[in-house]
Image 1 (cartoon, rainbow, N blue to C red):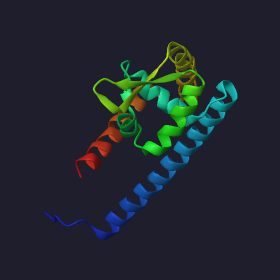
Image 2: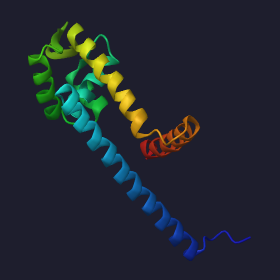
Image 3: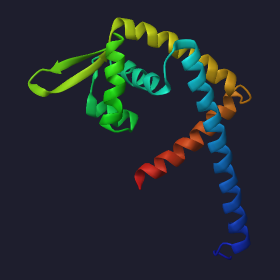
Image 4: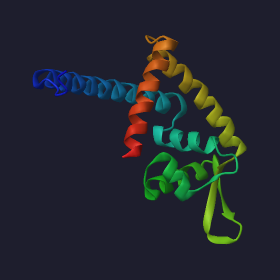
Length: 156
């Protein structure tokens, strides 16, 4: 049994995976651009603001800025400006962490929760529409495959 990969076969596999990556990237960018436009048009907001509110919606007690940055995988500086604007709009508040004068928690206000619920419902409908060509089974299978790629990369 030959355990060495056929160079021609490997090359063709590599090219097929590269084409897959490029198609995934193009599709992702297209869906993201459409979401950005719809959020702007329907809610006068941005995708980064939506992402911050989505992260906060999962943590009722709030998150420290560093934890919020970690969840979003962006720098503290990026999150600070977004949180500042959300606070100005009354959608989030900063709360001192008891016993730690330097740390603050960010959490959504009731107004923020209500606004995010409206946005999240629309977002779910938009994603359903934009990815409606996939059956639930196909979406589940693809999600599992992407999870496996992500898990493998996180182990490195």
